[in-house]
Image: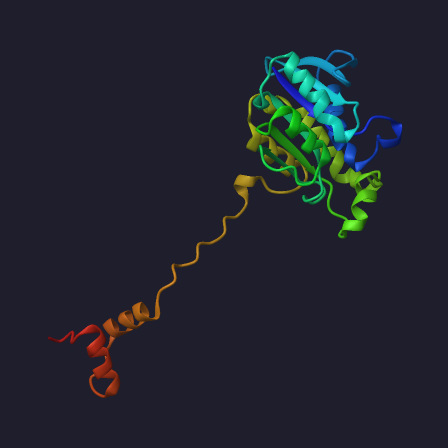
Length: 238
């Protein structure tokens, strides 16, 4: 069984917030696939269904963001699941808007919802981070995170959520890099494995090595330089 937890704050007041993109992602998966009607359990809204032949629980904690782990942890204990059976979807300030990254474990990056999950669920779960961009100054973060997505954001938000929903089975099959590639391509970028690899710089050579090569090409026959090189490298004519 897999739990897909979208993080956010409950209530209409927060529905369009950037901080609620986790709720939006889970809602998109719910609409695209066959899941049971939403019900209340584990201090959350939950819905059960099946993806890729495996039972999946969608969960939207109703505890408010900072206590998300209380809800998700309760569900994990009820079903006797491990951190590896959890995917958390949430907003990421440190990713540009429209970028998505999926990894196992890691730090919380100052995200209070993830701090709570780490405390109640362990840390080695998969984290699907959806970039919302940084406003550029620390004092602007609060209003940015709890502000609604702008109309212009729909240009990347809708295709990202649609692609995630269309390919949600990849989460069950642990096809993480393939899913990230599909999202990148849907947003007009390049798949990770298509990005140009940085060119390898030639290994640095010491000045002695360079001088040795130069000396092998042609040594001065006479003069002070010739005497110095002979002392350093030997007389090649001997």
